[in-house]
Length: 168
Image 1 (cartoon, rainbow, N blue to C red):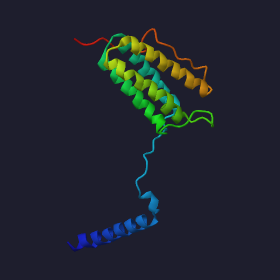
Image 2 (image 1 turned 90 degrees about the vertical axis):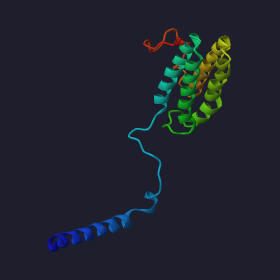
Image 3 (image 1 turned 180 degrees about the horizontal axis):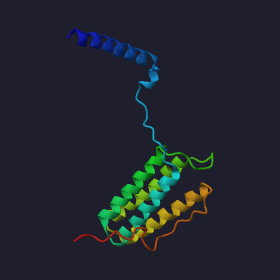
């Protein structure tokens, strides 16, 4: 027992002393809660990829007159846009252009304009508003000096293995 105490007491003292030294040498602000860090921040191009994927799915779900699926992908598209609107992405624009403001002022409203006609199953209006959404994408690309990126109404799904029909 004496042998155990002879080892345990110095070990405990060394551990306590180490803890005190570590705490004492840690700057106060590092103890405060900080934003998470990621290996690589989302860049605008990552989000644009999501935009195109979800917009494609919105189109084909709406062509199948599938309200639930169309609404789901509208929500996914809007949620993806929020990461830019909330400045959670690495900027990818000319220095004098605020891409977050473009998303808030142009893109998110164009998405939100589609929800109501989907809810009402007014598919002709959904198509018109989808065309406006695509035009909004291209307008934003022009503002960001990326007019060479031209989005169009899809003629076939990016993902051909998804069934957009309503389950019966």
